[in-house]
View 1 (spheres, helix red, strand yellow):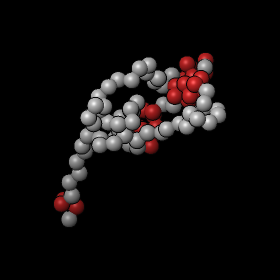
View 2 (cartoon, helix red, strand yellow):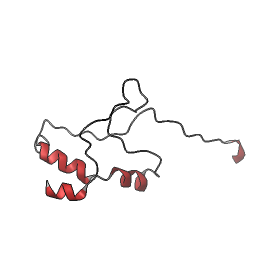
View 3 (cartoon, helix red, strand yellow):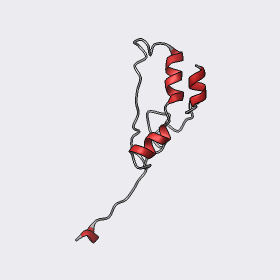
Length: 86
């Protein structure tokens, strides 16, 4: 019966990331990469496409992985106005 099914959410064991190949044009230009980073609204993508089940990340590895609980600076968060200025 349907009552035999239990669903649990646990901490993430991996992050879902999009990597940019900065070795080829136009992504070899740091200004282009900054523009893209500021133009992508990670929270909206997660909420609209992934049911809001994930958290936006800035690191390749989850924060609870060994030696991965670090903050990366500068933070390049979603800021569409800044993206337009770049």
